[in-house]
Length: 400
Ligand code: BEZ
Image (cartoon, rainbow, N blue to C red; front, side):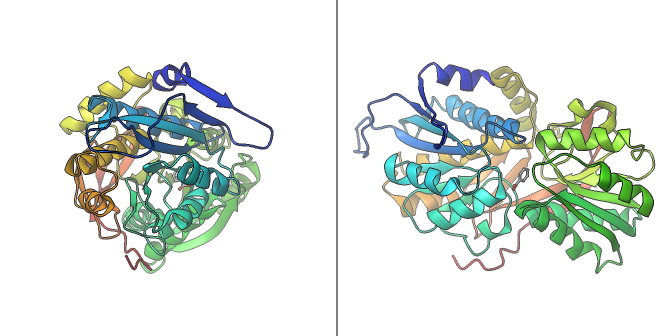
């Protein structure tokens, strides 16, 4: 666990029962409403995973968001900040109660989360049209920018479509015609596969095997046996976090690494160094690479390493940009979280100086951003091209 979380824990109360969430909250005497000139803290509720296969993703998002706000004097719009942090445990059914608790009982001003798309869909459904402002720092479910889009819901990450559609085009360009798909069988994996097919099949590609695997399980051997027998030109995947490391190592151990090129979106993100030589040569399409040479990224990587002890990755930059978005919005309304309309308008028109490169938001409050083509060389995700320039999600079903 990072320095940021550890420091916070000395001031926290842990409440854990067999049936309830792990609620981690600061001990404070909070004045719930903001009066101009008053000292009420801004309440930021956080619902992220700190256990399980996505634990690192959650802690990187939180660490980097806190780091960004710390760089702003630990304040939003001149007011101090209180964090109420809840472990999502990647549990979709429990996310209803956890979200409602943060909004209704804790009365948070901002709700930050989650990582997992199934939880993201659930949270967006609960939050749409409410007073609280939700910022999604990862979960890519298309619906958050589609049918559940709302003035009070923002995303600083990506959609399933935005990361996978360019991969279909890039793989065709690389000369692959017959591809096998392997992905975790839940909302994000399924949407990733669908977006890939949307560009790959009309472009002349053929999916010779479509293999969803149980989430978050990591027994891949039987699927690799099928891949070896089918001999596709290449494999396209979605796995992330701890499961992705196991996937890459097992793929190499099965003797496939040198025979059938492996592609993905998040597969090598924050994981390439841990997979060692098993990650070499893997290509991916994503909106960030730690190898980007812009000044914001160079500074971010140093700051994040110092703050957390870890190397920067896409999850950390999404947390950092979540902090920047709150800072920009709250500066405009001078800390008045009651001015919801002005605050959400300011957030929607923000330009974020991100380590991924500068970006702005679409009408659906979603980043319009470049998608890079990357290849792991020497353990890092080198940028070898731009797979899609200033890509905007089509926001199908968004009526906001
Ligand atoms: C998702 O569930 O949306 C997701 C989880 C990990 C990495 C990327 C996306």
